[in-house]
Length: 225
Image (cartoon, rainbow, N blue to C red; front, side):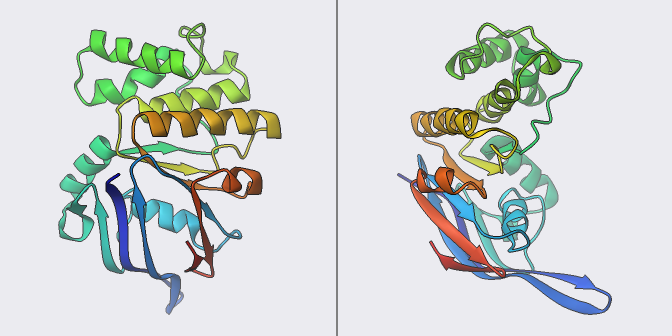
């Protein structure tokens, strides 16, 4: 296994009404390929901010973030954007599928944006959709899918580019327990198959217990990893 994501002494501050608010304080951890890790903590503990930093959607106030051997602190916006496109997939609590496009088109979109030949992009997308058990719904629109199917489509879209890292923010938050387990099992199996590191922010304790390890964050600090 190789180290895909590393936080070194990361701090994140916000300025509100003339005051400095410390959201993340001296965060240190790493993620390895094929590893699925739960990020847990109460609302407001800093989980979402940590995911935003890991996804290169915001800059830390201090410290260094390394993704696939590239240092975020020495990169500019264009380099960060390229790193994000090539190395990171995102899954959210709400699927954010484009309603006017089919399941197949939604999943192929990241590949098409990267300039992949459409024939190859759709072939690769169909293969991933088969793996998430949606091979019979390729031409469905998102509104024709169940909640679990929508989230499996979102997983396929995140994985289709074969990223090094997947960041998931409450990916099963809108699902009942049975569907949540199925979605998690599919995500876990695919990340291991394609040697992807996966960080999941979740309040679902059962899901967290089934991950390879847990990172617990409280008041902006990691108290267990």
